[in-house]
Length: 425
Ligand code: SF4
Image 1 (tube, protein in one colour):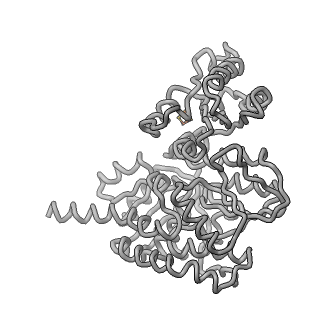
Image 2 (cartoon, protein in one colour; image 1 turned 90 degrees about the vertical axis):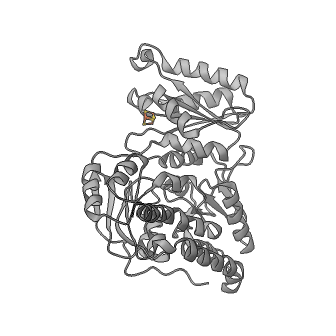
Image 3 (cartoon, rainbow, N blue to C red; image 1 turned 135 degrees about the horizontal axis):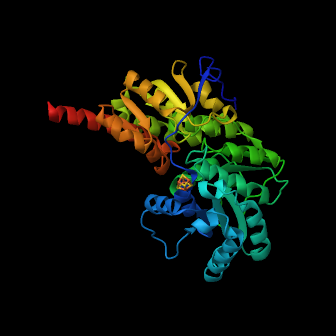
């Protein structure tokens, strides 16, 4: 099978507008909202403030499980002032939690802005608590703080923190890293199985008893473009990355599968047998759901780290033009193949200086502005049509069967705006 070829007119070498000013994004604690669903035997203990507890409660909504899977160990003023030994208090809280909850097999100590500011050493705490409560409970720490990070980096930090503890293996295998909704993960595994690719392991696994192993004969693919640290951690363990565009839309999914199929020497004939029908379905679904997008322009504020792959999808499969594509961080090793395919022309920006970027968005007046929750309402009030970036992370949007829904998510605000206009007229 032929390897996918890059587009010579893409954006990989385009200059980046780097901005390091004020940013408007959620913090990495947000990722706990989707991570706890993927790891039912895990508990996420945020070491933070009441603000952190409120964020989690409002973002996670009503807890639908018999037992909570996350909580906050609140740092009180005495901790912040250094008057109490926060490590001792943390040990006591963990003791209390684990004695009540023998079902917990993985405990994540999640750092926050306050714990980082007072330099509470959660790595040391995780080592100490693992020694005490292991092997039944593995204690790992990662940071979900909002200092210099964006919300999807919470997942990246969590997965990257797990990688050093994964068992080793010499087996030739594929690891797919990234948390997907279960139904989408099953579709992905079905496609890989149809191609005859295996064994396949998915990080994160649902159970601590069935950990992903990693070693020099492991190749890995990412399903989420925000996994820069996980990418680096897997490479440090000797695994090799299969670089590919991300599986959004028909084209992205096909390119992602093709890169893996190439690695595993799958014949073109078999590839077509497995992908022709879902490709066709995806194309038709995009044409129908994405019709209002054709000929429209888009402006992306940096928020989810999905911006470059999604701009690629919108420009190449939905007929849109990208005016600016902002991403919190641009890891060319990770999003390079999407940049190869993204038609040259948009301003590519990394980081944010929100006031300057708002000025550019107002001047551009794109047909659709993709941005964070905090910016959407004011921009709507100024007559711009917006899409909440965070919704894209919480919706099933990967692979063929979701391609139409992905186009539909972007088309909905444009349709709504057109209807409002008609109603006003
Ligand atoms: S980690 Fe930082 S940004 Fe996130 S809720 Fe806590 S204080 Fe706020």
